[in-house]
Length: 78
Image (tube, rainbow, N blue to C red; front, top):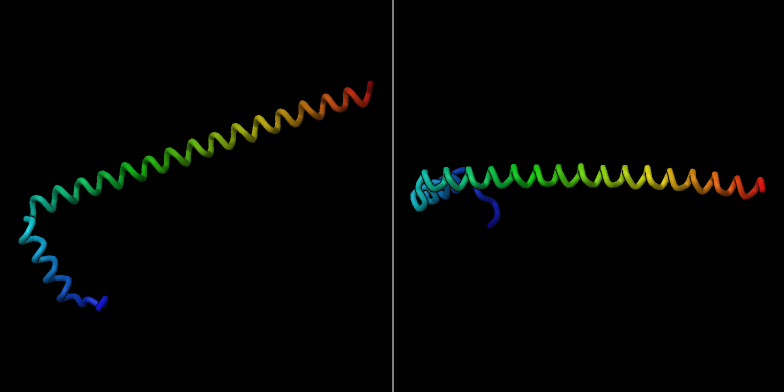
């Protein structure tokens, strides 16, 4: 049932073109392509923001840990 040959796909493509027309399919393809591009760029921006946030947290935690070490050394010396 799920095995479609080349001829079945070709007949299906012809039926779709006859139903919707090439102009409408071209517009639909362009809209779909721009939506995919927008989605990919949004995912890329999200990854960049996540990486920046993780880097900031890492820097802050390392700065805090070095401050804690300095404070503990000062207490030990006192």
